Image 1 (spheres, one colour):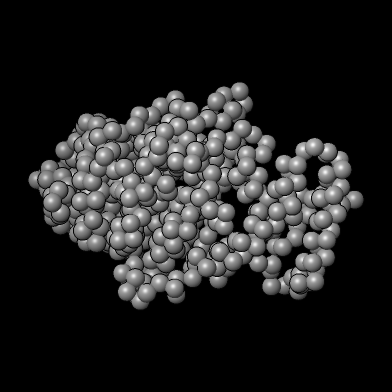
Image 2 (image 1 turned 45 degrees about the vertical axis):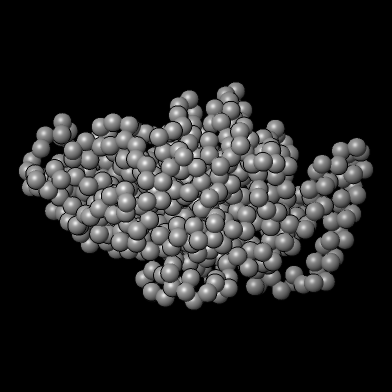
Length: 471
């Protein structure tokens, strides 16, 4: 016997979009759990400085000493063997000290050192605040990515975007609160585990959108082969839905909460209109598209993701996560074998588009209440792996922030002379997450969900707001 309940009906009609509407509405209103509700001023526990977040995640472990962490000691001692107290690194033996193959120069009024792989981002450094001594508990990709996205090294915990969606809800009724734009070439390490809502209501999981794909959003329209889904069949379906609604009301007199959510099919209609609109970058000027890199073939795929991300932010998406790099060690941030060639390739695809987002948000006045975050799961070693590669390093790496509530030009922490370990001002994902939540008006110690007898939170039992980088 087919279980034709109202909930199943919504999931099985309209290519699944009805179910998406249901999940969104249930999550937005907190059905099935006590959901924090942000006040009208923005923020949950105090007034927010940021309304929305865009996070750029460099999947694979961006090399800090080849991008933002200039170390003269590497140049002076290039080719030497240094005893780091380890017999082997994450995936290989300890090689000789390797200087960066890229030229570093100082940029902006702050004199920030940036390597030649980021010529466009170098022009934005005066708007950024740098965490120069980030560290991770692990130097393995999967656990490292989980730690940076969920606060834990193991799977099964909600992503930061899910916590933000749970805590603050949506800024718009037409688009999801948490959107993920993966690298156009594929998903990162852990695949969709990095965007999971885990034990939070499923409505808070990241919605994956692929702006470069033929079908950017799964189930936004009925499949092409489903010729039986017509205007008449949808009309018949709505009539059946009305009957199921009436049955539901008779069985649950006085409880209209679920009825109000399931009866509302309006969100599905809104998304069918709003989602294609936000993906339509032809509405942008030629100058804007060129600034992002849309006119340069090797930049265009990631540039499209970045341009769509900005369009989502201005249309009310609360948290947009943009990934650079898929799983794998070639043409990626995971530069085990060939830093001189692999790093410039992936850096070039990200540099101009991300800088364009920064400049575009600033020009539109959105940077004032948008938090921008650039990070990776860990860094890389100061010595060689193979001939000219670098191995994983959880000891230190770089993260930068910009925008709402951030002290432009600030620096917190520093690594040792080789950029091997943190030297002072060490920060972990817990501190980064606590700071991000603070700017969104959330006390990270008070945003919790009861799970298996424990009041779980994004920062576990750790975390401090990094006041040095706040304005």
